[in-house]
Length: 165
Image (cartoon, rainbow, N blue to C red):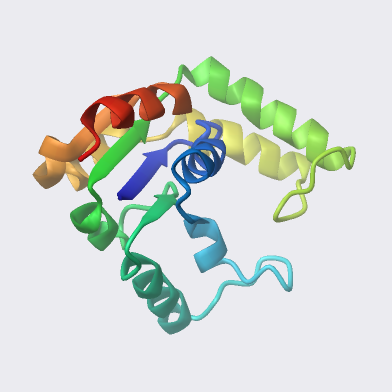
C-alpha cells in the first residue's frame, strides 16, 4: 500500500504518517527529511541527492509519505494508491503549531530543527493561514479518483479499513 499525505503546516501530517505506518506496519517518511540535511541548521541536501532519495522511497513496495511539498513531488501522487489531503480547521492547526513550538522550545519534545519565534510566526501566517488549497487540488487534479479530503488520521484509518484492496 502506498499512501501520500499532504496538508498545511500543523495539519497533523507527521502524526498521521506515523500512526498509519504503525497501524498497517508500513515504513513512513517525512519529505522534509529528504530535503533538509539535519547535520547543520538551514542546510539542504543537493537536489540530486534529494531526488535520488525520493525515488528510492517511491520504488519501495509500501510507503506512507507525508509533506507539504507538491511542486517537485508529483510522482508520489501518481504512484500512491490513495492521496489524503489533511485539512483540519485553521485554528486547530494554529493550536498545534503553538503547542509544538512550546514543547520543542521547552525540551519536552525533540524537533528536527531549532524553533524560533520568527519561525513560529512564519509557520502560522505563511504556511498555515496562507496555505493554498486550490493549488494542492490543482496539483492533484488528475488523481481526483484516489484523492480523499480528511480532517484526521482516524478518518484515514477508517477509510483504508473500508476501501483497502
